[in-house]
Amino acid sequence: MKIILTLLLLLTSVPAWAKPQNIEFEILRGGKPFGTHKIQFSQGKNDTLVAKIDINMNYSLGPVTLFTYSHSNKEVWKGNRLVSVNSTTNDDGDKFLVEATWDRERLEVRTKDKLYDAQASVLSTSYWNKKMLDSKKLLNTQYGTIEDISVRSDGMGTMMVAGEKRNVRKYLVNASVPVTVYYDAKTNEWVGLEFTARGSPVTYRRLNPVGS
Image (cartoon, rainbow, N blue to C red; front, side, top):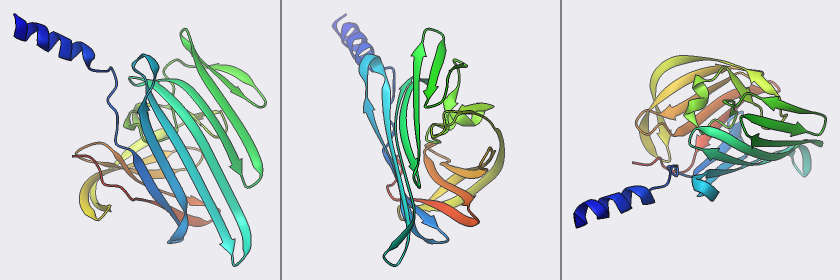
Protein backbone atom coordinates (compact mmCIF):
# COMPACT_ATOMS: atom_id res chain seq x y z
CA MET A 1 0.00 0.00 0.00
CA LYS A 2 2.84 2.38 0.86
CA ILE A 3 4.46 1.71 -2.54
CA ILE A 4 1.19 2.47 -4.36
CA LEU A 5 0.78 5.77 -2.47
CA THR A 6 4.36 6.74 -3.32
CA LEU A 7 3.77 6.04 -7.01
CA LEU A 8 0.58 8.12 -6.98
CA LEU A 9 2.42 11.05 -5.41
CA LEU A 10 5.16 10.84 -8.03
CA LEU A 11 2.63 10.76 -10.88
CA THR A 12 0.64 13.72 -9.59
CA SER A 13 3.83 15.77 -9.18
CA VAL A 14 4.78 15.44 -12.86
CA PRO A 15 3.91 18.68 -14.72
CA ALA A 16 1.59 18.64 -17.74
CA TRP A 17 4.42 19.97 -19.93
CA ALA A 18 7.79 18.52 -20.84
CA LYS A 19 10.57 21.13 -20.85
CA PRO A 20 12.33 21.01 -24.24
CA GLN A 21 16.02 21.49 -24.76
CA ASN A 22 17.09 25.14 -25.12
CA ILE A 23 18.00 26.01 -28.70
CA GLU A 24 20.69 28.29 -30.11
CA PHE A 25 21.40 28.93 -33.79
CA GLU A 26 24.01 30.92 -35.63
CA ILE A 27 22.44 32.59 -38.68
CA LEU A 28 24.50 32.67 -41.87
CA ARG A 29 23.76 34.86 -44.89
CA GLY A 30 25.58 33.83 -48.02
CA GLY A 31 27.72 31.58 -45.81
CA LYS A 32 28.84 34.43 -43.55
CA PRO A 33 27.80 35.13 -39.93
CA PHE A 34 24.68 37.26 -39.87
CA GLY A 35 23.14 36.87 -36.43
CA THR A 36 21.72 34.54 -33.77
CA HIS A 37 18.39 32.90 -32.91
CA LYS A 38 17.97 31.68 -29.33
CA ILE A 39 15.08 29.98 -27.53
CA GLN A 40 15.01 29.41 -23.78
CA PHE A 41 12.33 27.30 -22.12
CA SER A 42 11.04 27.53 -18.55
CA GLN A 43 8.08 26.50 -16.42
CA GLY A 44 5.20 28.97 -16.23
CA LYS A 45 2.15 29.16 -14.01
CA ASN A 46 -0.47 26.40 -13.97
CA ASP A 47 1.77 23.83 -15.67
CA THR A 48 2.44 25.98 -18.71
CA LEU A 49 5.59 26.09 -20.81
CA VAL A 50 7.23 29.46 -21.53
CA ALA A 51 9.37 29.88 -24.67
CA LYS A 52 11.50 33.04 -24.75
CA ILE A 53 12.67 33.72 -28.31
CA ASP A 54 15.31 36.27 -29.30
CA ILE A 55 16.49 36.88 -32.87
CA ASN A 56 19.17 39.41 -33.77
CA MET A 57 20.65 40.01 -37.22
CA ASN A 58 23.08 42.64 -38.43
CA TYR A 59 24.75 43.28 -41.77
CA SER A 60 27.56 45.78 -42.05
CA LEU A 61 29.99 46.90 -44.71
CA GLY A 62 33.05 48.06 -42.84
CA PRO A 63 31.93 50.59 -40.20
CA VAL A 64 28.58 51.17 -41.94
CA THR A 65 25.54 49.19 -40.76
CA LEU A 66 23.36 48.35 -43.76
CA PHE A 67 20.69 46.21 -42.09
CA THR A 68 19.53 45.37 -38.57
CA TYR A 69 16.77 43.11 -37.30
CA SER A 70 15.67 42.21 -33.79
CA HIS A 71 12.72 40.12 -32.63
CA SER A 72 11.81 39.35 -29.02
CA ASN A 73 8.92 36.99 -28.38
CA LYS A 74 7.50 35.34 -25.26
CA GLU A 75 5.14 32.45 -25.96
CA VAL A 76 3.15 30.52 -23.35
CA TRP A 77 1.91 27.01 -24.13
CA LYS A 78 -0.45 24.65 -22.33
CA GLY A 79 0.37 21.26 -23.79
CA ASN A 80 0.18 21.81 -27.56
CA ARG A 81 -2.13 24.83 -27.25
CA LEU A 82 -0.75 28.34 -27.72
CA VAL A 83 -2.25 30.50 -24.96
CA SER A 84 -0.34 33.79 -25.30
CA VAL A 85 2.18 35.67 -27.42
CA ASN A 86 3.95 38.94 -26.67
CA SER A 87 6.39 40.02 -29.36
CA THR A 88 8.20 43.15 -30.49
CA THR A 89 10.12 43.44 -33.75
CA ASN A 90 12.40 46.05 -35.27
CA ASP A 91 12.86 45.22 -38.95
CA ASP A 92 15.47 47.73 -40.06
CA GLY A 93 13.50 50.59 -38.50
CA ASP A 94 10.00 49.24 -39.12
CA LYS A 95 8.50 48.34 -35.73
CA PHE A 96 5.83 45.73 -35.00
CA LEU A 97 3.95 44.64 -31.89
CA VAL A 98 1.88 41.48 -31.42
CA GLU A 99 -0.12 40.47 -28.35
CA ALA A 100 -2.24 37.34 -28.31
CA THR A 101 -4.18 36.11 -25.29
CA TRP A 102 -6.31 33.04 -24.69
CA ASP A 103 -9.85 34.12 -23.84
CA ARG A 104 -12.24 31.23 -23.14
CA GLU A 105 -12.38 29.40 -26.50
CA ARG A 106 -10.51 31.79 -28.75
CA LEU A 107 -7.14 33.50 -29.15
CA GLU A 108 -7.54 37.28 -29.16
CA VAL A 109 -4.82 38.87 -31.32
CA ARG A 110 -3.86 42.54 -31.09
CA THR A 111 -1.40 44.45 -33.28
CA LYS A 112 -0.75 48.19 -33.64
CA ASP A 113 -3.47 48.37 -36.29
CA LYS A 114 -6.12 45.79 -35.49
CA LEU A 115 -7.81 43.45 -33.02
CA TYR A 116 -9.33 40.11 -34.05
CA ASP A 117 -10.11 36.58 -32.86
CA ALA A 118 -8.07 33.68 -34.21
CA GLN A 119 -9.06 30.02 -34.22
CA ALA A 120 -8.55 28.37 -30.87
CA SER A 121 -6.23 25.75 -32.41
CA VAL A 122 -3.87 28.15 -34.19
CA LEU A 123 -0.15 27.66 -33.57
CA SER A 124 2.75 30.05 -34.16
CA THR A 125 5.46 30.44 -36.79
CA SER A 126 8.26 29.91 -34.27
CA TYR A 127 9.20 26.46 -35.70
CA TRP A 128 10.50 24.89 -32.48
CA ASN A 129 7.21 23.03 -31.99
CA LYS A 130 7.06 20.36 -34.71
CA LYS A 131 3.26 20.24 -34.27
CA MET A 132 3.10 23.35 -36.45
CA LEU A 133 3.66 21.09 -39.47
CA ASP A 134 0.20 19.60 -38.92
CA SER A 135 -1.45 23.03 -39.28
CA LYS A 136 -2.84 24.77 -42.34
CA LYS A 137 -2.86 28.20 -40.67
CA LEU A 138 -0.28 29.79 -38.38
CA LEU A 139 -0.03 33.01 -36.40
CA ASN A 140 2.86 35.08 -37.74
CA THR A 141 4.54 36.33 -34.56
CA GLN A 142 6.15 39.31 -36.29
CA TYR A 143 3.14 40.78 -38.12
CA GLY A 144 0.24 39.30 -36.14
CA THR A 145 -1.36 37.95 -39.31
CA ILE A 146 -2.73 34.47 -39.97
CA GLU A 147 -0.70 32.68 -42.63
CA ASP A 148 -1.95 29.93 -44.91
CA ILE A 149 0.71 27.26 -45.18
CA SER A 150 1.24 23.92 -46.83
CA VAL A 151 3.86 21.39 -45.80
CA ARG A 152 5.56 18.65 -47.78
CA SER A 153 7.90 16.05 -46.35
CA ASP A 154 11.16 15.89 -48.30
CA GLY A 155 12.55 12.71 -46.79
CA MET A 156 15.50 11.88 -44.57
CA GLY A 157 19.06 13.16 -44.56
CA THR A 158 22.00 13.85 -42.27
CA MET A 159 23.24 17.09 -40.74
CA MET A 160 26.10 18.13 -38.49
CA VAL A 161 24.62 19.46 -35.24
CA ALA A 162 27.14 20.91 -32.76
CA GLY A 163 29.85 18.68 -34.20
CA GLU A 164 27.72 15.51 -34.23
CA LYS A 165 26.31 13.84 -37.33
CA ARG A 166 22.55 13.42 -36.89
CA ASN A 167 19.77 11.86 -38.92
CA VAL A 168 17.20 14.53 -39.76
CA ARG A 169 13.79 14.86 -41.39
CA LYS A 170 13.37 17.61 -43.98
CA TYR A 171 10.16 19.54 -44.63
CA LEU A 172 9.28 22.16 -47.22
CA VAL A 173 6.96 24.81 -45.79
CA ASN A 174 5.20 26.98 -48.36
CA ALA A 175 4.21 30.29 -46.71
CA SER A 176 4.68 34.02 -47.37
CA VAL A 177 8.40 33.24 -47.09
CA PRO A 178 8.96 29.61 -48.17
CA VAL A 179 11.38 27.77 -45.88
CA THR A 180 13.03 24.39 -45.55
CA VAL A 181 13.03 23.22 -41.93
CA TYR A 182 14.89 20.30 -40.36
CA TYR A 183 14.06 18.24 -37.25
CA ASP A 184 16.16 15.59 -35.56
CA ALA A 185 14.81 12.16 -36.52
CA LYS A 186 15.20 10.76 -33.00
CA THR A 187 14.19 13.64 -30.71
CA ASN A 188 12.06 15.80 -33.09
CA GLU A 189 14.08 18.84 -32.01
CA TRP A 190 14.43 21.73 -34.43
CA VAL A 191 17.95 21.62 -35.87
CA GLY A 192 18.01 23.68 -39.06
CA LEU A 193 16.33 26.20 -41.34
CA GLU A 194 16.97 27.54 -44.85
CA PHE A 195 15.30 30.32 -46.85
CA THR A 196 16.08 33.14 -49.25
CA ALA A 197 15.90 36.77 -48.14
CA ARG A 198 16.54 39.74 -50.44
CA GLY A 199 18.16 37.45 -52.98
CA SER A 200 20.62 35.82 -50.56
CA PRO A 201 20.49 32.32 -49.00
CA VAL A 202 20.02 32.32 -45.22
CA THR A 203 20.98 29.23 -43.21
CA TYR A 204 20.51 28.35 -39.55
CA ARG A 205 23.36 26.34 -37.98
CA ARG A 206 22.53 24.88 -34.58
CA LEU A 207 25.20 25.49 -31.96
CA ASN A 208 24.04 23.35 -29.04
CA PRO A 209 23.65 19.55 -29.18
CA VAL A 210 20.28 17.84 -29.26
CA GLY A 211 19.00 15.87 -26.28
CA SER A 212 19.49 12.12 -25.95
